[in-house]
Length: 79
Image (cartoon, rainbow, N blue to C red; front, top):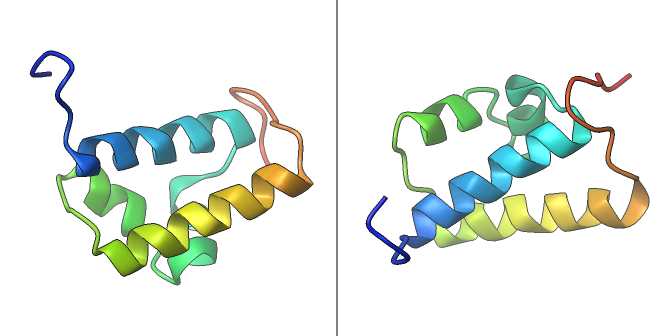
């Protein structure tokens, strides 16, 4: 990392990864539910930068689930 200066894409990817771990989502299921793309997280991990519209959609999906559900914790699977 380049000190404290992280790009939006890096912060966004970190946010998604933290959500996956906290809520026990499998990456493909998260992508499918959030944006209809099961490869979404894989592409983020490969360095893809989402459009702002896609990032807004994903962040809204995360916020909606966080408002409804308690975190599952690392290693706990979703039903």
